[in-house]
Image 1 (cartoon, protein in one colour):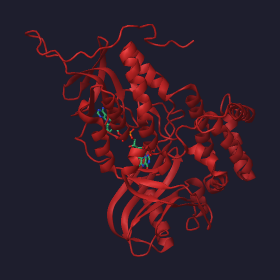
Image 2 (tube, protein in one colour):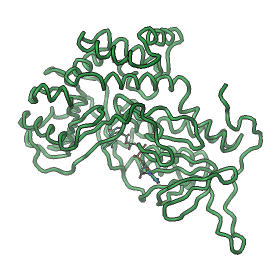
Image 3 (cartoon, protein in one colour):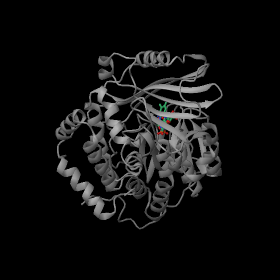
Image 4 (tube, helix red, strand yellow):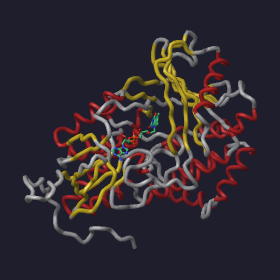
Length: 448
Ligand SMILES: Cc1cc2nc3c(=O)[nH]c(=O)nc-3n(C[C@H](O)[C@H](O)[C@H](O)COP(=O)(O)OP(=O)(O)OC[C@H]3O[C@@H](n4cnc5c(N)ncnc54)[C@H](O)[C@@H]3O)c2cc1C
């Protein structure tokens, strides 16, 4: 049986405001809030805002004043909560993947977030209960029922519950990456083009065509184009390595991007900005701990797509409900446990284990076979590949899709996939079948 911290508590948590003054000679007591969130990325701000909406007093600590998130965030439109659908720079209905010269239309609208609007909306939704504090957290120590959190400049803050939303490396606890971090990397530019690099009006989600490269290079380091038409002569073009350990360098990806654009006869003119993407894809579900991790610090990055933002925006209300309810009813320790349980129910933990198996299979696949793999993947009924890429996918969804991709893939792709699966202790084709069948009988996970 798992120990459930705070389960036996019956006394309610009540917010204790900061004492007005300290005893002479004593350092002043740190200012108090119910929750302290470390990190001002989309995940941290989303969760902080949901806590504040529920009436908790929240401090968010980030090294910078609030300012629009820097990366280009894309998301499937149907995965964004309704309010966030008002924070978009663009939406495409023409969304394609290329594994051969003939594109496969994905028939699923894809959105580019307007990061300034997203941040404004989150802060506006948070209202007056959220305090944004500029600082860098360096640690937290138990103090009474909660935590005294320490800033690098000597600051001290007290909070009943501490959330680590410090990004891919975490701020208080490092995420675990089984077998070492496997990175998604990309080099891209937003630029003006005289000759369009992709079909105007479209988004190319994945273009693995590589006739312009020597086959040995593709086999060693497969990369694809991710591109969006941003209107007029503006395009985002990014040469992307889906997942690799070790990852290709920025210089190689830049070289690849220009080789591709040259082959397309579409070199960029004026460049507005460059983008460098590098983050781990294979974080394991975090174990329960004294602090709650959220966002990429909690391994919420999808291990096959690398997406996280829509998942964090959607999960934040559920987690905030769980934490707030337990905090009021049973106290801080129970609140952290409740937040972790809401984020990682057994079904989602099982799904994460399976997805990490998928990561290993992708890492084991010779690069030149990735187009065949994804041709089989996107050849599945849309409901299946969508479920696989969704943040709420259950283990049954994943197992079913993995088996169907395996069945539909060419022989050359199946062998390395099977070898990767067999290398995993406790995993077998029979095991996958059992998970898929069980979920068929029970109606599956959230997407079943
Ligand atoms: C260039 C790029 C493009 C991406 N594109 C997409 C995309 O299109 N769609 C998608 O869904 N995902 C995308 N991702 C993946 C992922 O969603 C993003 O990395 C996202 O920013 C993660 O959000 P987060 O809030 O968890 O972490 P972050 O955005 O990394 O935010 C972490 C915050 O914590 C702060 N912090 C860290 N340590 C401390 C500390 N000790 N004290 C105080 N503050 C601290 C950091 O300064 C930062 O503000 C992309 C990633 C990158 C790098």
